[in-house]
Length: 304
Length: 276
Image (cartoon, rainbow over all chains, first blue to last red; front, side, top):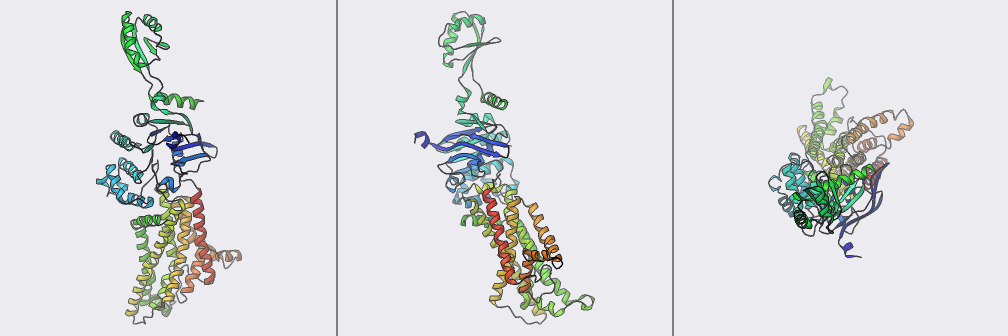
């Protein structure tokens, strides 16, 4: 067993779910390590919720294997250490937020005192006596997170937690998730919002049509950064850059030069160009956004 | 399982629909079991033609209390607990709380066991809310009419209470199975009531004319529930759903089957199906 294996809280191997002729999830291999916030990214209908439900034991896989916190999905051993907010999970409309949590605490076998603690954590104490059916969407989502936190879980599974929230609610929820992901706790965050994943997650898995098309840190997925230079005369600038060994391939696009090179060389490049009499009007870092990566991945996979 | 049971009780205690059902059942049992028969006894229509006053009186006083109350079980009581059984399980699908509950800690069958345990308590409560006021009403009527106050023996009370529990329990179990099967409340309630109020009546009605239906009705929960109730209420005036089609022993056996088979079916479906 490698140190990496010991650190793994969730691992799926060839995880597959088929509904008749529809392949919802296809041979998915996910790995989530202790203490990381893992972004599970994919367009609507890609198989994210189906995967999360399989991790929780709500849906039986057609094939493959899941190891979650060293146990089988849906087993009391696993569920005792998992908190989940999965799309479509509900609460009892006739009960208050607090009573809802008390019922769940009873099911989970956790002390009633935890209810006050989690209500405080999601800033819902003041409205906890109101009936759930009167809650706004944001309050419902926060109650969902509170329910997920009841067991002080080692692994938190959040499925589109900002869905339907207004911009302020989304910002609040993201900062809450960031706080929850600190320390030893692992968080799996499913989302179709790239910015959200980019802001919150340490590593990202991209799913498209039930297949994992990419996995890595946000930086890895975005690839190596490059430099963009606007200079005149352009051909002279190209000549100068060609003499610099550390500079990789140079592409020309309109009045721009695109360099796939280490951004740390920017100052040196600028100095050499100016010394050679080239006027540098702009020199900046070029990074692919996660959105561009995502679109290129999902477009390629979708079109394949 | 204890945690699941206690969680279920917490939910049921605060659920308005359950209190509505209990109140309605209480009101119906008192109105149709005591108030209306008492008014008929006091003011018989058409000069009392077609009414056996002595039989009516016998059902209203403490000696007839058990039979009078349990006579409402095969039809009215069955409908109430059928709905209760459906609501206890079916609403979890409608509110999407089944997934929430299933991801807490207990296994699926533990959750179901908790629900069945709480439902059993609820069924006992359904009995209590009609037996206790029925006893009071019968004592008041006996006092008002200067009739003897002869209470049944404790063993007889226990026997009727157990029989009533079996009649109601079978229908509550059927409700649970329908709710699990259809994963909702509206369709199971509709189907369950059509079965109880229409199909049972039709099969029972044609049972005397067609041998096949005659055999079938002896295996139905409504008819056998009515037979068991009839065995406790031999002096009861004509009561809907109460007639001795089978003997009490066969009725008990059939009702036990109707209590167990739906629970087994519900367990299999709940355990094997995906919670989506």
